[in-house]
Length: 458
Image (cartoon, rainbow, N blue to C red; front, side, top):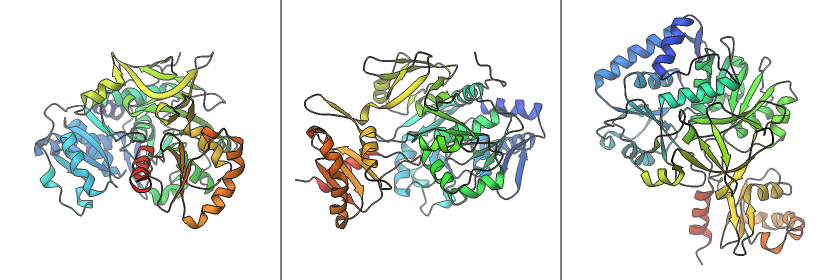
């Protein structure tokens, strides 16, 4: 049904070789105040850096992703040099890095000059069989983060799937605002544009989010819901922007509606790190009714869980964790942990997370995101989340004890409407920001641990 305009590249090297030959002088990357590299110039830069990396004799490079041109060049060069790549958050606390280095066999780091501590003692002997592998860490919203083993081929196939449904052209300019150490940012902020032969503009960091749309004047941009909300408040969406791709989190309907009201096409995407990013994209008027990407097969289990099969984009597994791999990937079928349905047209509707369902002792269930949406109607503009505490819902709200009376008063009308089993059993006011991933998702498991350790000792 859908035909991609460009090949499904087997590697980053094949992508660069093809595009440098077909459109050598076309802009590949724009960056900084006025930096620009054509496809041919980018390929030459990558090849030169790859030779230097080969001479160094290292086998696994950990990249602290800052989104710069030098960072993108390093990623592609390490891939060409046959190294295993591990893409890391540049803002990770230094004390967390040694464990990640050991877990993924990193023997060299790029970006370590930005760190105060010397991590050399923690470097390993490298990955013996890591050529072609690219490791991303899951966002860890409901469990501790795992290192997902993907490949250059699976990431290129994912970009091809996206281009089959939402093609870009060499005349397009895709703005990359999202962190490259997240698979959505890497595939939909970078690789999607390059695989279509478009120009990718590399954002200059969080301080410049709003300014970068004016500075680079993109025709397409990939965002997470939290970032889109910020851009809309800043009235930052530029003239000439024709497509906004939203992914990596639940999105309030008001956000895509606000974009569409500006005459800009909106597409909402569903994907997982384990599938190299996108599984389905919305193409019609309903942003939550999504066309399944060409290479994927999706079915719904009896309990509503989405089960996914794909030979070209599926992960090889979780690094050094066969038990966790076997728990979700069986006979080529990924158990996503997500809930959803397929409508009469075969379009996918994602309705939530299995792990975000609170099951009461009497067998009744409470879907936490829906519950939080009801609470938000009486607690607007507040940062909060609901967790399970002693088999009952508890609200954790950012605030101070002096606000308790006002919060209780605001909640009372809604609580009276709910069955007793669904009423909040405890309201915890905490002045600290709620733990979130880089894409804005609540890390409910971290919040649960904190509450149990600090507020539920008795």
